[in-house]
Amino acid sequence: MKTFFDSSAFAKRYVEEAGSETVDNLCMGATELALSVVCIPEILSALNRRVRERDLSARQYRTAREALFDEISDAEIISLTPDVISICTTVLETSPVRAMDALHVACAVRWGAELFVSADQRQIAAAKKAGLRTKLV
Image 1: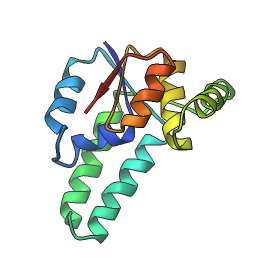
Image 2: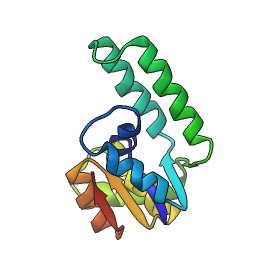
Image 3: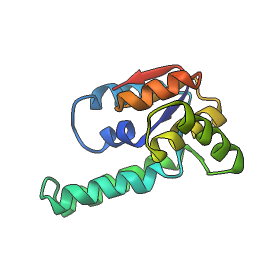
Image 4: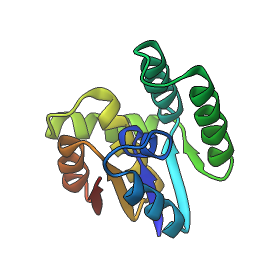
């Protein structure tokens, strides 16, 4: 199944929290995996915040960063194109989501995702409204 992960879901691969096991299983079951180009910096930002807050050691950060870059070598990275921005505009005009959340949804729509995975309920609602099959983790 062509599976698209937003940052809130894919980050669960690198930090053990509720939903991590589900995300791992979805990744293993995906025939194709895609992420928005903004997903990588968002995950790195979240991991760095955890380091600053001392919830993650520098060593754990390096391990997570290496795992992230290893995994994305096999993933489709969806860029911000005029078509994605157009879809994003529609998502923003029809759903109460933030810009980055709308970008993830737009990238998934443009890619033709068969499953959109997120930990954000508003984003899941927007993805459903955009015609995507969804999984809340």
